Structure formats: C-alpha cells, structure tokens
Image (cartoon, rainbow, N blue to C red; front, top):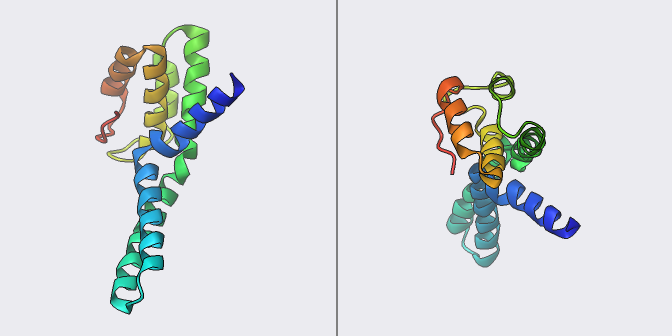
Amino acid sequence: MRIRDSLQGLEVLLIGNRVSAAGISLYIGGVAGYGMTERPPDNLLYISIAMVGTSAAGISRYGVGTYGAYQRTLKHIKKFGRIGHRFFKKYIEKGDGIALGYCELQGMYLAARKCGQLDSFFENKRKYSNNLVPNF
C-alpha cells in the first residue's frame, strides 16, 4: 500500500499539474535535442526549448503546490466528507487570479476527483475563484 501511495504522489507531482508536466517535457526534449545535434543554429533552438521548459516547471514549483493542496484536500474530505466553502475560500485567498493559484486548484481538483467530490469542487470554484485555467 505504501508504494502505491508513493506512486500516486509522484503522479500528482509530475503529471497532475499540466504546467509542470509540460515544462519537464520541454526541458527533457530540449536537452535531448541539444545532445543529438552538432550544428550551432540547431543547438540554440534546443537550448531555448530547454529554457522555456525550465521556466514553466519552475513557475509551477515542479508541482509541489499541487501536491500540497492535494494532500490537504484529501485530509479535509476524509474528515468532513466534502470540500467545505471555508476551506476552499481559505486556499483561494492565497493567490487567486486569472491564472494564479492554478497549481493549488489542480491539487484540490485531483483530490476531489479521487473522492468523488467533483460537484462540490466545481460549485466552490464557480462561486469563489476567478481562475480561468481549466482543471482536468
């Protein structure tokens, strides 16, 4: 059971947050492309791709905010049976905007999906969040 939890946590960190997943993929692709070329103009392209990937992954803090929100939301749902309005508002107040707060929202979404609480999540998101980035 412990290995399964670790793998699920790794999934939330690396795949659950689409921004960090895209950033890590771009970084790996850029480094791999750089290693396979010998011509300087091509190297510049791959260096740029790796830099964009590093920036995207860094902005998302490599999924750490997503994982933290996921763990806290799981505990909250297990304790109260749903995502409460106060819990949601408290998380959102930390950094809600059109795109800010996506990482935490994605962690909450993943926990709600796991526990069958998507209706509660989307109801709270509709009422309290200005974030336009879709959660899936």
